[in-house]
Amino acid sequence: MAYTSDYAAVEPGRDQVAAQPGALVLEFGAPWCGHCLRAQPAIAAALGRYPRVPHIKIEDGPGRPLGRAFRVKLWPTLVFVRNGQEVARRVRPSTSAEVDEALRQIAD
Image (tube, helix red, strand yellow):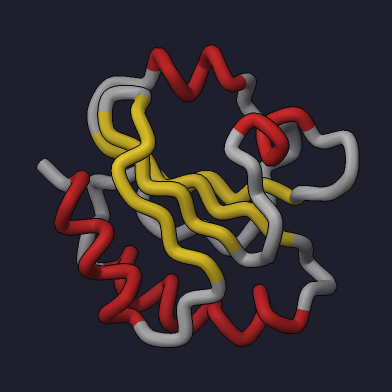
């Protein structure tokens, strides 16, 4: 699974993220968010170079537990996880190079 343009119907729990082996990218945002929409080409381009890295797009907002667990404040926020632990984070990336640099830290 590489880049996904759709938000997950059900967000994973923090314990599920912690148990995930290998690399994982969590993208927090909202479908109506202008910053999120503008960042999509850069995110898609970078993730396209890492087709084996799972990408979960999570609709965030007040009371959403996973976003709060990762202390997400602005959208989009990409959290790069390796073996359940956050390794890198990018907030409102504007270039694929920003995302690519973080992906290199978690990719196999």
